[in-house]
Picture (cartoon, rainbow, N blue to C red):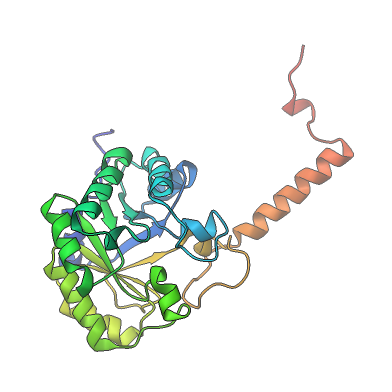
Length: 267
């Protein structure tokens, strides 16, 4: 590694809150885009189980497997020099008991080279978080709207129970989590949780007062077909750009103008 490159670490990630510096996180699932994100300066890359929806076309995140998370995280880690890479624990790993969760999480870290795992849950997952941390596995929590609970929730619904949100976030911190994702909760509640915690909060659909933000990369790049959540701002229309480029490619091939002399080998 180039000595001039200073990788983001878990302690640096936590310290950003004390320093008052907002943290940036995006999802990624392959080598090429991981390189682009890392070179652009994002603090952290999450290999999310959202890959089930944006990469596989699944209706939700539930079908994603451990082997799929490992495969995509390996691809991402090969392209990253600076960002903190976090792998999602896919359903239902963190409900299989502390020892099984440690075993599978350790496998993810050992086979991929990522630096941490993320699991959905708060108070009811405190013992699992504590067990992982005791085993030397950094953990990011995830409270509020939990996509792995979509069947129980009956859809992706904003979570408004402030008492539960605070208890879950506090439990994750007390168990040793180095950060917590706040998803799909009203801005005032997210601000209250962020103020209360010593560890960074990373918001997604949780307003501007979190210590950092995360978005699904495909949503942020304007690649997602169909409707996206209210919070998913598209910073460009990459889908339109790709479609225009492909249409132009098809036109040039059809009319015989590609490949031309500049793109062909001579004798």
